[in-house]
Length: 199
Image (cartoon, rainbow, N blue to C red):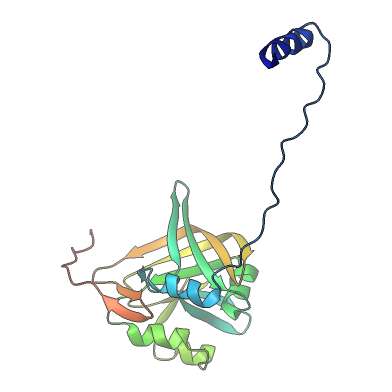
C-alpha cells in the first residue's frame, strides 16, 4: 500500500501537482561533551616533533623577535610560509603593522639563541645582543641560521590564543648543517647524517 501511494505521489508531482511536504525526521538533540581541557591538549601537542625557528620583525623602537615551533610550508606557487604566533606578542604586532617578517630555522648549536628569544624575562635588546644582524627588505635577519626567509605579510587570522600568519616569501637563504628540533618540551637533534645544502 505504501509503495502504491509513493508512485501516485510521484506522478502527481510530474503532472505539476505539488506533493504534500514530508515531515522532517525526528532527530535527537545533540548534547555537547566536555573537551579534554588545555592541559591534555598541550600534552598531545608536546608529542609533535618540530623544527625550531625564530621570527623577527621591525618594531617601532627597533627589532623584535620570538621563538616558535609552529612553522610550515604552505605553497610553492606562489611561495607561502605559515607561522603561528602567540596572541598579544609584540612581534605579532610588528608583523601586522610593518607587513613583513623573517623566519629563521635554527641549527642544532643554537639552543641558547632559541632559549633567549623564548624567555619572557628577556627584553628585545637582550634577545638580539651578541648576535650579528643585517637588514633584508627592511627586516632584521640573524646571522648563522640554518636557513632563513624574509616574507611579506599576506594574511593574519586569529584562532584561539594564537594567530596564523601567512607570508609570501620574498628572499631566501639556505645553508648547511643540522636543524635544532623541539619534542616533548625539550630540544633535540637528528642522529642521521645530513647532506650538504645544494650550492
